[in-house]
Image (cartoon, rainbow, N blue to C red; front, side, top):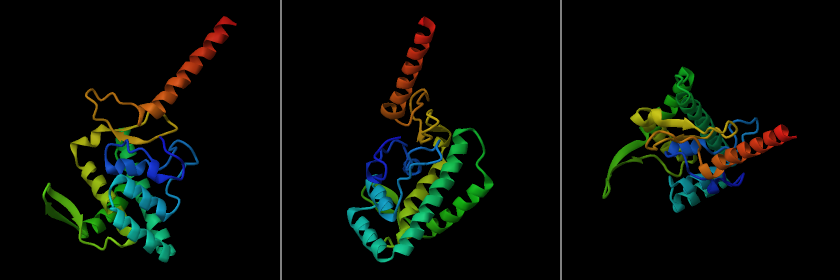
Amino acid sequence: MSGKKSDASSLKLVGGRLCLDFMNTVGYRGCIDLGEYFNNYQDLVAWSRHAGTISHREAKTLSLKAAKYPAKAQYALSRAIELREIIYSIFSAVAEDKPPAKKDLGVFNNYLSRTMTLSRIIQTKNGLFWDSNGDKANLDWIINPIVRSAADLMVSEELQKIKKCADPICGWLFLDISRNQSRRWCDMKDCGNRAKASRFYQKKQLSRLVNS
């Protein structure tokens, strides 16, 4: 859990997969105030550029279109946030060894159906990759790479490696690819160090009580 609040382009990408990093665009899953990073469509563009799902040119095109059509931009943002919360609910259940809710899978499948209609496999010098044959200037197109990433993870063997940060206030998700599956924190330098500091403080306070 890190990055300056309201600056989506500075968030650490510690999830291990694009869709997990997308879900980690709130500061505090364990609080009523999530600490939202997507406060407007420009934040979504900034994060997408940061995560590498759009080019500089595509980001500029989307930003200009969002400024021209603010109502459409707000609708696209609301869909992105809905998608984020749906896949967070699905993967959070998996991390807790629970079956995802059928309702959540149903909503996600609606997003997936639309994305697959606009998707294709292309040949590049580095191999075969997903691409979109839809209009990349469409404000809603920006979530397509997220949908594909989530779908790929859902049907992969890596699904069972998803974990939730041990800090209950954080709640970020990540893929634990450590050798012995022992990773506990989204970021050891952030939540891990904060937990260590908390344990040290509690131990110090207990020592004072015992010796007083």
